[in-house]
Image (cartoon, rainbow, N blue to C red; front, top):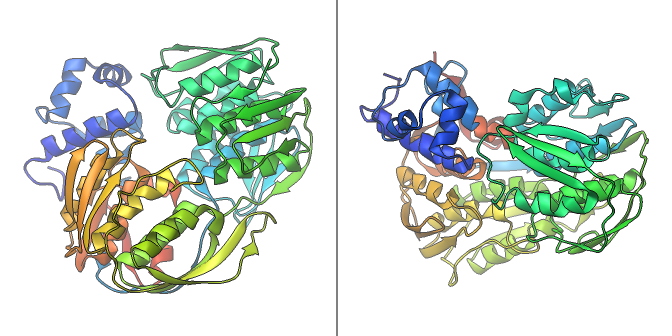
Length: 512
């Protein structure tokens, strides 16, 4: 038996595999095809009726991009957290994870050398770097820094693409916009079972058809063909998604003409891509609004350096850590434009903080402040808390309000209408003492204040809920264990080490 698991571990693992499969948008048949087994075998696994070897757990983990199912595997990383102590000191917000991965895709538009300064050095970035390297791009981290230098080849070698790395990140879909200018036909891999009717894929394909891109989904691949077509009118996005907006912007950047995009996301990572493209000589009107007018350049060959902006989701993570541990800390380099709704909601709950005057990020554009938290009691908000496209409450920041609500007096409804399963992961907070009532797959009621308790929890396969559990463990007196934290490393750089610098006690360990 795997160390640290109870006798009911097959059922628990089966439930986690089911959740991870659904999170990836796969059916049982899709997962069976990836593993070379039968749908009935997957059904037995998810019901906890079939014993699993560590080798099979590792294979499932790879297929679902969820190392949390490789329990006991020597490569799995875990955290041991001694909670219940206050944090102190100051911490800088790192540059954005979501901007980093989009910028790496956007670098394919440039035939010159691109240098990204202070790039987030995280696992999600590593996967894209592996993909870029495999298709002939020279990529190197400059010594002693987080600066990444990218030099493209004369011709990309898509046949050499590292399919395993590509399938471990959904970011590869943002290759569509740049590559349609390089090839008449090409194929990109995806994790099997992708439904072209789902909200994550169909908006991309509908919008990119305006540039002559036609895509057929075959087993494990998008097969793309490109015709010589120009947008006949404004491109109206059917949803204001960040990724689809970036994909269309990248397609427009090298279109020889003017492209108008309506219902565009003006979120932080979208603005970063626009700022980068301006450095490449692309003229973009309306940055920060929902209507963009892009004057493309059919050829881009520029040696350029660019500084991504700071990450508002990491800023929110640190703010939540301060709230639940009742700590006074200073969070430096907070991108205030993308935190104003969150701070307004927190003020309404009774939170107090100090803020410095605004200053600029290294890119000269993003507005930053330093925030110092003031410990004090909070009360539940009168209305539910729910996300909206920017400038509303950020979709990725919503889970952190679950633990903030757990620290407040009263009952708070968290309504996660965007994702089908993410609210369910918040029920894991019951293990650390939070009173959570799941109303449906999108809504939970959280009643506080919480009497936090230490626990052992397996990371859910979703990044933000995983960090929420880590932050909750900081508040729980005693020693907690958070298992298989690869998903956290995908989006946060050295988070445990940086929290330890604030007085936390977090130890990284691996099973032997």
